[in-house]
Amino acid sequence: MGVRIDAGDHEEPAHEHTFTFSWNGQEIRAHRGATILGALLASGHRVLRTTRIAGEPRGPLCGIGVCYECLVTVDGKPNRRACVTTARPGMVVTSGAVARADRTES
Amino acid sequence: MTRKQAVAIVGAGPAGIAAALALAEYGVPAILIDEAEHVGGQYYKHFGVAPGSSRGRGLDQLRQQGRERLHALERSKVDVRLGTTVWGFFEPNRLALVADDRVDVLEAAAVLIATGAIERVAAFPGWTLPGVMTAGAAQRVLSHDGILPGRRFVLAGTGPLLLAIATQIVEAGGEVAAVVDCVGLTEPTHRLRHAQAVVGQPRRLRQWADYRLALRRAGVPYFHNYTVVEARGDGELREVVIAEKDAGWNIVPETRQVLEADTLCLHFGFAASTELAQLAGCALAFARERGGWYVAHDDGMRASRPGFYVAGQVSGIGGADLAEATGALAGLTIAYDLGVIGAEAYDRAARPLRRTIRQGRAFARMLNEVYTEPPGIARLVEPTTVLCRCEEVTASQIDQAVAAGVTTLNGLKRRTRCGMGFCQGRICSQVVGRYLEGRYGVAPDEAGVFNARVPLKPVPLGALATIPDDAS
Image (cartoon, rainbow over all chains, first blue to last red; front, side, top):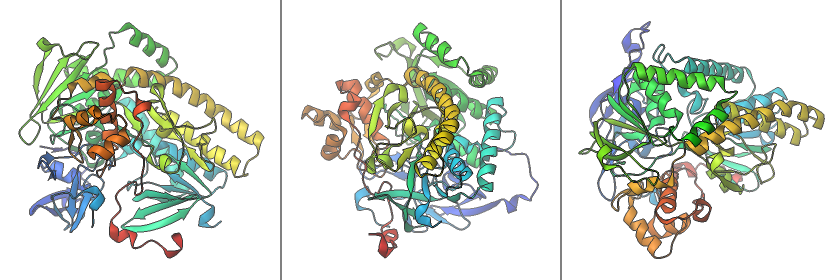
């Protein structure tokens, strides 16, 4: 779905700019400094979780860490915001059910 | 000086940076805190944009201005703490922070709240579908990550930012099926207000003209006085239904159009992020010309609680120039209140800032009053429409609570759980507030705001175990 914009300044070889992490078992390529959300959108993933009650799909809404719609599990830590979390090489990211905010543990 | 004597500035956007630079100029130690991993806030986020991906003259100017501020900040002695969230406040002036899953407590000589604003959204059938996001979210991934979050876009809501972001999308190679503004500039009163406000704002006029021209060249249809009615799709957004509306927000059926789109960007202006100020006991005020609820303050940016100051969007929604001026003034006032500068020097330095603030407020007043999210937008909501996204509370649940006599946001929260989720009511306070007003005629100051509570943002339990012993 998403499209990476060609910046047009390839001074370094591409592999020095990019790395991979895992999203629900699938390999995702990300650019250095990218948020998890940016990398997922660039790879066409915009459904990040399903809701606790109705089981509805949800994706990002605010993009600035306020709405908590883009919650994912990062290296076993649940309820991390994909939009404000920087992607790192080898990270294991999964979607998952979100607990009630007032009964959260992580 | 010790850490205890530093001024804490919460929010490293244009206002927070301006305040930090003002304090640095007078040698007052300042700690600039931001949740993001970069300084600049949402306004200066353009820095990450790939070279050449956005050629608007207006945007280039913003970027240049931002770069200068950031360089000045780097050269200063300001202690900048990024990736740091303020999640609590404890008497008399202690801020609870969390960074990297570790909690810290900061005792400050004074606290400046420059926590900014969030975009307003509106609820309508299908607005929870993946692919529906704020215009700012699209802009952020575009600027920060160099990613277009979709291929074919509809931008809907109101205000000049729709034009700015549509232009960015087009310049980045995206297709914009339509820009849909629910305000009609064909209305003479709106035109008059515009004319009055833009006098003396040549840079803004040039920016708008740039955007309009770029969009016209790209053949992007621009709908005035139209609104998004519904978002459709099976699991993800596929179609957006738009239609013209009359003054009472009745949809004109024969104008309905179904647009194919994978991304719908919403923007209905901004709402001030007042939670920390509320938690600290600073009084709020409500005024349409300030964009709704804001933190009450005097002409030196002092909040109602001694030792607390506000700047930027929390003091009233307005542009970055206004935010910077309020930030610089707040920094100056803090230096004065701490006894670092005398009354004469204070007055001399404050005068030009106050002038800029007056002009900025006049312009912001027009934007806030013309490009507002009108209560009538609640007419788009159907009984099954989710109003609180976190707790999945529907309009019909709110209707039942209202029928039982509950008409305040805090009352609805106790009865329906709306506002109790992860976002702590930051999104649904606007949506439910507008619904109460549009559907039931409950005025905003009657409905009130959700009480702020600790933690302001979810803190992992493991992090709480790291609280220093001497903090309690």
